[in-house]
Length: 263
Image (tube, rainbow, N blue to C red; front, side, top):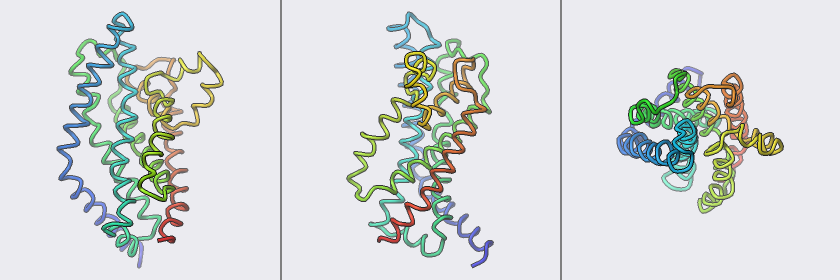
């Protein structure tokens, strides 16, 4: 089969994914694009600053931004887990693998999961801006950079989860993956506490969390929205996240191939 034929297959399967998940788009947009940001705005950007920080809304906004890492992981996991668990159920994954090279299949799934996660979280920050009004203390916000960061972040999450889920031998192990790996990654990935606070408290901890891709998601988004010298610059966050995406994709080539061969 020539390259043009593979491109057509890649596109056809990608469109099939959009068709299938498009039917669920409204539900996910309501849950993650509207309800989640509203609840997080009330809890982290409004109530928490007034209760704990004497109405320092900048602190609340910083905390609110960190929540998007958890949402992106959850959204991309929805797509990735369905693909991998399909191997032993409906077999559509095996059908795709019978006519698509494994590497091309992996790239397609990671790319689609990234697009899916990105599309759902697009309203997250614009809605927060509307709800908070003048309290949305982000005068230097760059919306193009925010959306670029969101897509690259979704891409990194999708690549990581494809690799991590490919390592699992049983579906029951997903709970262990989340409790033992993903949740600690979220907590130590700037979910509530920015990197400069962790680094000031413990330089050793500050250096250690730099191996966590989620820290570059939360820091990059805080930089794009709030700005300032306290957050890691986008010139670091964006290339590092792209690097993580490439590394996890390459690792997936090896791990997923072994998984498929064992079936």
